[in-house]
Image (tube, rainbow, N blue to C red; front, side, top):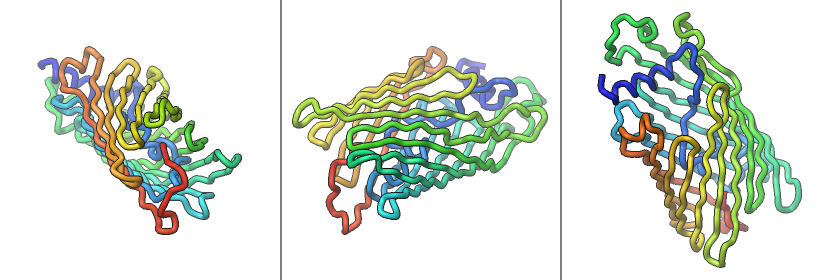
Length: 308
């Protein structure tokens, strides 16, 4: 096999491995706009009915590379004391496809006039399909690649989220259960891994027209290295944003964004893998983000700018 086939086979092995445990959850460079999927306590914190969509094409030009789509929607209810949300995530890598649908609910406590603390729970179902029969193997009759898998895996998660106008921090575990992907004895140890997420960000005025928005995102799961994203965005005139990101041991990238109005935001990012095993054989990763806030007539003007 050529190098691309070797790498693809390695990635597939990681997904199916009976002994290896690695990060399985989809990654997004626009993690700061995809907070609801990571943390149910984020639901309803934007004081509007918010819909966000993200598409990510990872390692463009590489056969079988990950492709992800995420759409989330959430809104406050009961005078802002409770938030509800719905999330859908599609994740495809090689022969493996999964669609996760989640319902989110949180309760928000006002700590003082400027800050709130939110506690959230998530219920979800992962529709998992692994079509290993579509792979071309050099070794025939390999038991690890003999059985296609189709399963619906229920799960639940929880999170906590602190926020005020110019700062937020949250910790969450969106999947508490470690479901097995297959009932086969061959892949008995192949299962979902519990992930722990921490996210934090703030806004700092550099001048009247320029704001600095640093954010960080930490991902941890057993038997895999701790991974972190550090992003530095600059917001100009509350309209145009430009920034850079660094993902430890993996990638560097750039982000662009534009607020067409108080309600509509568009974002794009490009990141380039620094890993020797993949960076030489792909054209980078692209991501596009759209967010829309539906503001009711009773709240035709939001009281303050929403940065998060």
